[in-house]
Amino acid sequence: MESSRIITYLTEHILADALYEDGKLMELSLNPAEETSLLGSIYVGKVKKIVKNIQAAFVEIQPSMLCYLPLEEAKNPIYVKPKKQPKLIEGDELLVQVSREAVKTKAPSVTSNISLNGKYLVLTTGNRMIGYSAKLKPSEKTSIKEVIDAWEIPEVGLIVRTNARSAKAEELQEEYQKLLSEYQFLVQQAIHRSVYSCVRKSRPSYLTSILGSRSEQLKEIVTDDAKLYQEILEFLTEEMPKDTEKLRLYKDQALPLKALYRMEKGMQDALAERVWLHSGAYLVIEPTEALTVIDVNTGKYTGGKDKQQTIQKINKEATYEIARQLRLRNLSGIILVDFVDMEDEKAKQELLQLMRELLKKDPQKAAAVDLTALGLMELTRKKQKKTLLEQAKECGI
Image 1 (cartoon, rainbow, N blue to C red):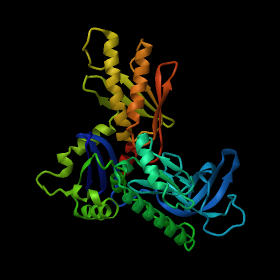
Image 2 (cartoon, rainbow, N blue to C red):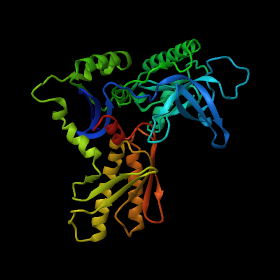
Image 3 (cartoon, rainbow, N blue to C red):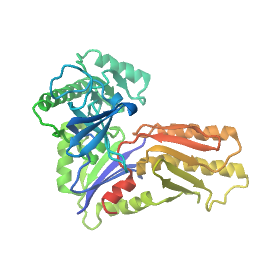
Image 4 (cartoon, helix red, strand yellow):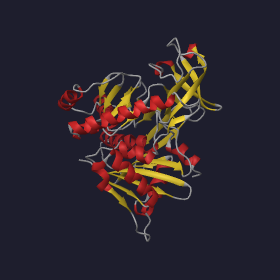
């Protein structure tokens, strides 16, 4: 089983958190030390405009900050002020949650489907069904369903997370009651708040990373900052008491935490255009306005007399690294991969299947769609927060 470790450190200007799996850097987030992301925050927003031809509304959550609200994301809205008709109209004030950060020239996106995340469950207000993580086995879903069927659930939905497989029935019940109480308090509080109020701030990325981690894989959480240590400890005590023993305050002043894990080197590599593979081949990663292009090159690789066998080996190695780079750089949207040309159709399909299997491990929704007539592999990955490159620019790196 893979083991993971979360590292968080603070400098004068940057707050960084990193996820390592079996010693390899898999995810990295950078934030200006004095700022927090809007992603996940809940506001009392005001509908400024409804554009029917694109089936969207524009909602103001702060003065002059307009956000994009797809009308399909406006099911079962929670209105702050009573109204006679359920249809969304201009001037309405409602609770919205930031579902995607501003990306390049695009405004942030919001949804009226409020989600409250726990370790095992997610409570939702728009979709009032009970859903299960695709990573749960059928037998696990059946046993968890037996537990949930005994609950009295009001007009909310639930998503059962992968971590629920290791939870006891009473732990699931306790978290459900906690999320439900949080939701009820949120709604009761909202009707007394003025427009543009932030009724619930998002968690910092390092806490979100911890909450989203797989309990059975998470071996250690390490920080070298006493204030962060205390904040994480309070969070774990409240949300994940079984994992408090995994938290460690790093105190070796002779060797800083970021130097021990070579985080600056990892950051440089993650921001570089070229990624070298162990074989001597390399990837070129080029983000554009509309999509990201990844090119696989044979580079210095000279092994193997059989050309097609050599190409297959390079492409397979590249597939593993591309799946990692998507997470590490937080690449999203449309991604096109130009592998080294292969003649064997069976080998092409095997490569596509390998990519699909690897993307199942991505915490973000990702898919390998198909191979085009020109041999390009089409990938998609859900957009939610800024790419690592955009984060670095905001931090002055």
